[in-house]
Amino acid sequence: MAEIRVENVRKVFGKVVAVKDVTLTVPDGEFVVLLGPSGCGKTTLLRCIAGLEQVDGGRIFIGDREVTNLSPRDRHIAMVFQSYAVFPHMTVSDNIGFGPRMQHVPKPEIEKRVKSTAAMVHIEDLLDRYPAQLSGGQRQRVAVARALAVQAQVLLMDEPLSNLDALLRLEMRAELKALMDELDTTVVYVTHDQVEALSLGDRIAIMYSGKFMQVDEPMTVYDRPAAQFVGSFIGNPPMNFLTARLTDDGTTVMVNETKFSIAPEVADRVRATGRPTVWLGIRSENIDPLDAPTESALPARVIVAEPLGSHTLLTVKLGDAIVKVNAHPDSAFRSGQDVWLRLIPEKIRWMDKETGQALN
Image (cartoon, rainbow, N blue to C red; front, top):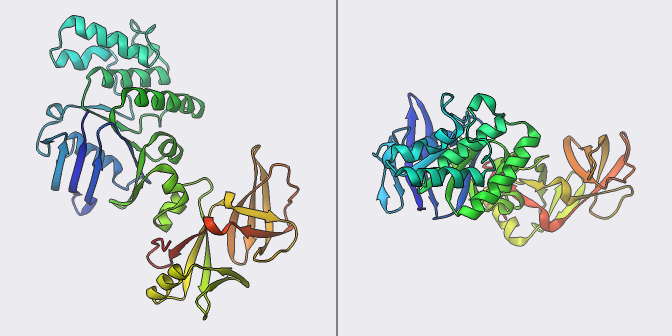
């Protein structure tokens, strides 16, 4: 295993800057997820680390070696692709043993690695089959076992679960998490699926337009997004954002006709922007829907109530804004009903309305 260091890496395709001078350190044994929408640069960055793309600026280190200009085979990495990329003419056993054979590992050691890695991913009974005889989940397990058999310093994974159905993804995600915890391997994992990112990663690196918007532990990213984009991208439903106006006394803000207290240091930061309005960000589970008015509760009206088993998701209209609220599954809220929203103060995230950057 080895640390990965990406220093000011830049990658350009024609006139498009896919990766914009990004810097990232992945300590030995850490599982980091690159997360973002399609086209944000996450796969390009992974391919730069792998050596499948030549960088146009910056340096890449794996362990104590600079690998910026080395070929993929000289970087001591293993990679799992979205399309599995298992060899159709080889048995499962030969697929898993392919990497060690290319490394000229002795045959007894190859056989040992094949059996041990197959057992890790629960395909030890499939070693004599060919990929065409396997399900999608089994082929994905073969791809993971083949990468592990190389015993590389670093494991790179490019959306490895995206071709699986929802139930199989859930199963494979749990297995992969347990396996990576057991092996203590340095992993960089690319996905656009936020549930995968939150459940798998030791840290998440949120990318947008070729840059990192936030790199932090999963629950910090979820509870304390560093930018409006992060809050609107992470979470299902995403974070709600309401326009709030700082009052003349500087100690409160107004959302529609309702006053909220604001910390003095946040008020100072709002004033420093030179703009009187700010985003108030709040998660749906941090709003208490009430059926009667109370102090500092925002009046709204239910548009849709969706029973989802563990909770009922309310879509409500608050002034000109549409807000998502989690209500108790036994609640009796119905479409067209008046509702009052009490926000949990310590869960509010204040953000600059122009830059989108967090102010608290």
